Length: 64
Image 1: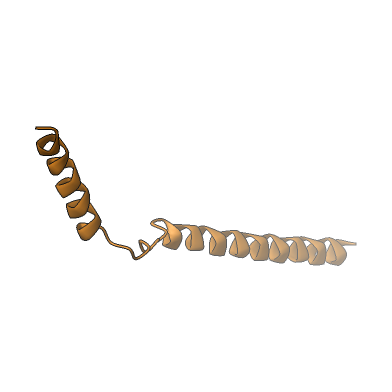
Image 2: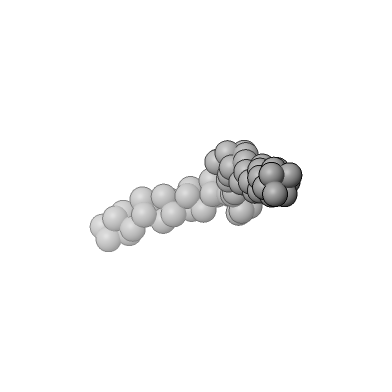
């Protein structure tokens, strides 16, 4: 009687082991395009701020 209780457990374990995938799941960063866009925007902002600072400096030098 006891073997009948263990048999379904063993069968389920074998079934799960047979159906499981041993390969690692492909990890894809879902928001990577958005992160890349934000990084590019930060770089562009720095470039624009530098250009604005140079323009203001040039205007100040012209008014002196």
